[in-house]
Length: 204
Picture 1 (cartoon, rainbow, N blue to C red):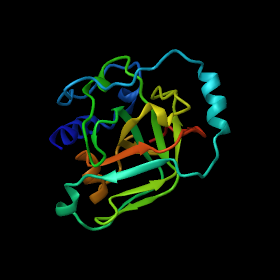
Picture 2 (cartoon, one colour):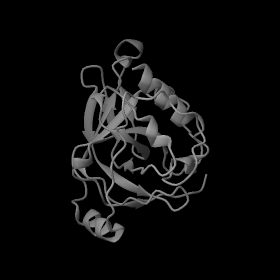
Picture 3 (cartoon, one colour):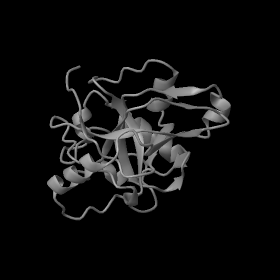
């Protein structure tokens, strides 16, 4: 859990520089504690145009993403936690560890690491009795932040953490959800292929 918290804090500390989450920018945050071995996704060369065509063919409105709260919140903050539509998740390596206490991959901060980004289309509420819930997500595209991947495949087995909120250049959540997000305690996982790319507005 400490690794997840450290990684989440490092990833979100400089949220005002979202472009650091793109695949070719130099990292602007401290590298989180390394996991025992790299789990960064291996991406073979493929046509983004072909992926885009596949992403556009996926059904709209079908559940395709699971959001979980960390086990630490069961005792620290047992009240229901709503994660609203518009929250943006960014990939942090292949799934490792428990869904509620994942091991995040330090290599995902290295230059050239491929990042996949999704945005929630539907709000989800997490409770102590139901700490994980299914919802609907779309891939997020941004030239400014170099988010170019139009398709997330379930077979990639990626894990995600919150990196921001749609339409904001700086992290705007100054409530309990924002506190737990900044502590790296909210995670996401594809449960089906995710497409239907949504261009992100880039104004603050």
